[in-house]
Image 1: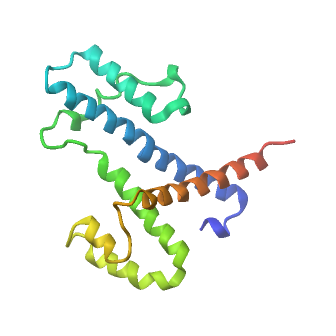
Image 2: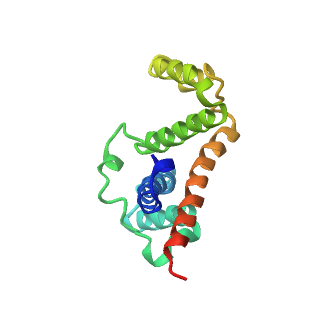
Length: 174
């Protein structure tokens, strides 16, 4: 769809894609870091509110870096997420980030191989839910244990970011 869209439509589509992707990758990573810190603290004590707030700010700083101004970080982001309080829902957000990045990695493989990848893609889809992720992925030549696979998935996002920046620059009057 992006390939055939006019520049304004492509800009709008990419904005939506990137808003969702950054939420899925960066924000969910901050939540993963927060949950990890809480689990670690719970080994020795029940963290009071101020410690939880500090953990959330620290997680946001680590995940967002300078991409989120310190004054806009939200120390109480943990309060309104009920899964933090549900037994058995540890790392509730992980599947969202994993699914996005796995899908982008599969898409990158398609970009590299073209139409010849489609039978493997169909096979991958037919095996989903019937085996481990690693085995399903391996059946079509994907090794989810390789860091390069995940970096390749992020490269798909990088290309979309670059295209978005190019389109944004064209929108700014000279």
